[in-house]
Image 1 (cartoon, rainbow, N blue to C red):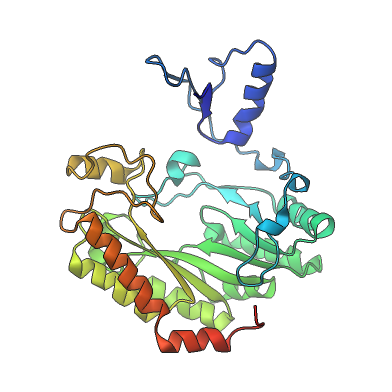
Image 2 (cartoon, one colour; image 1 turned 180 degrees about the horizontal axis):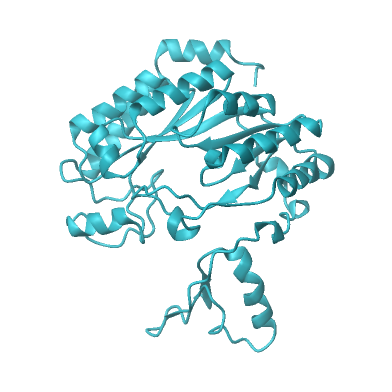
Length: 331
């Protein structure tokens, strides 16, 4: 049984939780907790406010872990994840970010991020990074400043980050490449414009084509995230997505089956349409997709369509040849 569960930004809450447990043990005055779990009287305390002072968070205690277990698949070297910002103003109906991090874009100072990079390089020998953000490129000026400081500091590092397709330009991507960026991951989602409109992605297939083209011209690899299984998806809309996957021909892809997370607009829509017969808690869009299906496709059919899209991308001879010729080492 659990005494308490933390919701919200745990780093700002867990300190108060530990202090209370070490003193009087009272938890009802701490925001961001669910207490009395397992009893009929489970209580959710007040929702915590999203904090602006991300610089106040200490760096992860990397000395307490085996950093060698976490490796960059592009290089085989140890890789660290560095939180850069939180929050996203986009309105995508399937995303948990507004629930977890809010819509307001909050970022660490460039100097604070740079200090953590230096700490990893000097104290742990880590030179590969994932700059984690809900949307790393949301503030182009911030990213360019970070790239400039990485170059000024003489930090020879390799890193990857994520982005929306409609916020990148040639100048930004070239600055990222010069500062050590090797790959940009984009959430393209659906290849069907009507589905894109319904999920409030507000980015088109043309945005996706432009983003991938600019990345190639800048010498950056791309990872495309695609999603099928929205309530309105049918064989045609999924094929539209499959066609976009083939056309973009990203270096790597992930194809997810939409999961109606609790607290999202997608969850509300699926409930209204009768597609959720039980809670969606406990499922994931990798190994255990939610079994609700769409208005037109069963969950079993979605799983098969996902496999087909992935196989068609990775088993093509031109793709295999391109990957082999781009290898920098036997590994």
